[in-house]
Amino acid sequence: MKTNSPLPPLKSVKLLDQLRERIRYLHYSLRTETTYVYWVRMYIRFHKLRHPATMGGPEVEAFLSWLANDKNVSASTHKQALSAVLFLCNKVIGINLPWMAEIGRPRSEQRLPVVLNQTEVTRIFTLMRGEHRLFAQLLYGTGMRITEGLQLRIKDVDFDHGTIVVREGKGKKDRAVMLPQRLMPELRQQVERSRVLWDADQAAKRGGVEMPYALERKYPRAGNSWAWFWVFPQATHSTDPRTGVVRRHHMYDQTFQRAFKRAIEQAGITKPATPHTLRHSFATHLLQSGYDIRTVQELLGHSDVSTTMIYTHVLKVGGGGVRSPMDALPVVAPSKCEEEPAAFEGTTIRHGVPNQRPRAGAKPAHIS
Image (cartoon, rainbow, N blue to C red):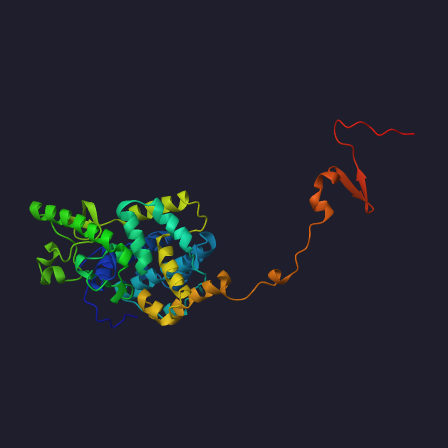
């Protein structure tokens, strides 16, 4: 049955264009748009290009079963695909059938985050260079997500009060984090380098930077202002995938991720660490230093303290909790067999009695 949705009618004709139009109307991120389009396209191709309006619960279940059983996707990927298909049905096509609430959602397993110790963090920073090194230090020193750090604007860095304001974080929330004192000189130099690029753009009358929501229409000149410029701008211009405008973008996340991965490999760290691991390490090290869980929750921007509590589990596993019973056992001296393995080389055991075979090249024993 059709839903009584207050959403405006769609102007696009093609289904995927309608999906993009609805996502942008609801102010979803570009990353979400790309993900939803990917899964909806796969859903349609799985059913031999049938229109989703002609399909229902059995087709959705068949698609999800194929992902889980044949493709062996994780629970989070399973949920992602399901969210994309349900968004298409509810927000784009405008159908809300009873089977939507009956579709089983996979249960995510709680996994402990990967955490680097302080020595490992220092080794990584030593092996990185330039703005990539500074950016990694800023992620670790503030607990910001990588997208939050990349979208940092000049106006949001307050050197006088030692504060960074994170705008439009996860859940569309703003929060304030500390500005590490050790990073202030390098961050000031980074701002000066950004100023050089901004001056060059102004002289060339380029398109400024991207503005959130409708601020570009409300304040047409704000995108060209110094206050809205990126703290970590890209060295070259790029084309906006949504508008086609050529302008200055912030540093690409892929380039930083590659630099971070190289540093991990060169440091000889075997943990499956990513840039997000710096955020996990930030939270864990704060708790190790004695800060309370509520303070860490506010700095990370978590809505629920239960999300932050995962780091207390890391501390318990790391040795701050229960003592292993193995550590309570008395030290046992190695046996003679372990001390002198060569004495039994080539020996087989028959009925509990060693049977020594002569080594190659050894003279046979004299028989009297």
